[in-house]
Image 1 (tube, rainbow, N blue to C red):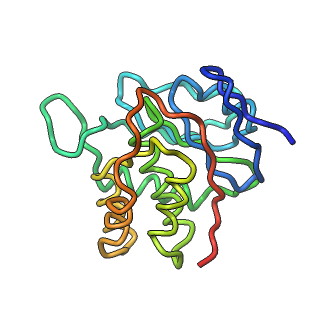
Image 2: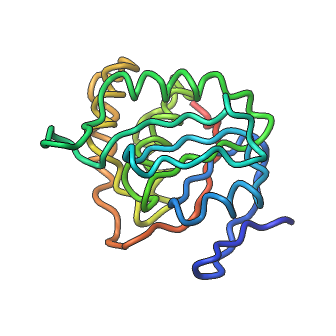
Image 3: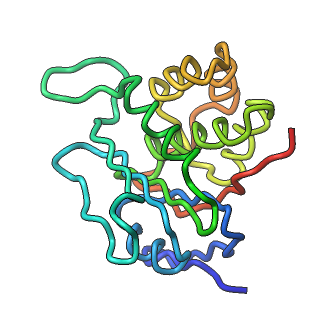
Length: 190
């Protein structure tokens, strides 16, 4: 079986089927794209740190969402908004699932894990939010999804607060400077 190798600590993540969502920190984007043969990339990071599209990914398969990892407006920073969430959902639903999708932010802990949870909820409209959140926690003990992104998606996806409640239930992840690469199956049983 192929394995994805994290350069920072030689942790292996088993390669999965093409309909897999990977989550990584910025420092492991290139490695993850290459090792997992990623076809679609989502960047959730501040405007000054937006990355170029890797050579192996077609430009229109790279969604760049410029935002800071905040939940309330602050001078000089970009708070996540409903447009960001709507673009992420549209991009996720357009993903053909013929090769993996990678979602990343700076540390692979907050914006990217919120993005992965939102993607799971969008792709699995009939699946319980708590089951999807538990899947996220099982994938990453450090996952601490950005609450604002989750709340906005809760509204856009008409989940009536259940996404936020599910993230509250799994609680804040373990403290870490950077998360490890992890993967989630895109489809879950309802």
